Image (cartoon, rainbow, N blue to C red; front, side, top):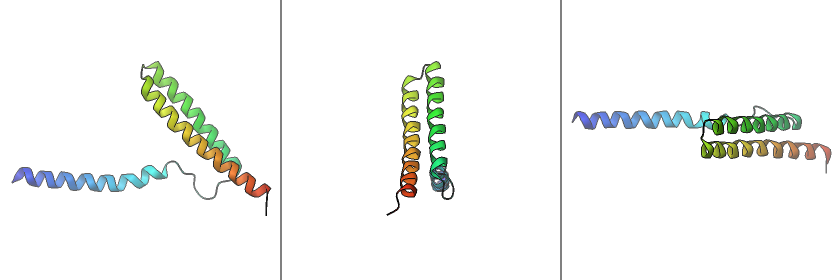
Amino acid sequence: MKLRIRRIILTTAAVIILALAAPVGFAQHDTQGKPTAKGQMKEGGKQAGKAGKSLGHNIKRGRILRGGKRFGKRIGFAGRHIGRGTKRAVKTAVKP
């Protein structure tokens, strides 16, 4: 009986923690408000710099696969910001 109650409490706590942590995790990669094209390009450059830095740290410690995976994720975020900045720049330059 005690084991069953403990299992129910732990399961409920895990569900609550995961439900609250998911929105916070998604919000970390977006910039607030309506950013400019220049701001998006700067953010893309920052992400690319973080990608190289984390790759170097991981390779230095012998974690080549982990470094490559995280490098790819960061470069993906950088590409997303560069794409958004390009979209904004084209929209403001070419008005139909």
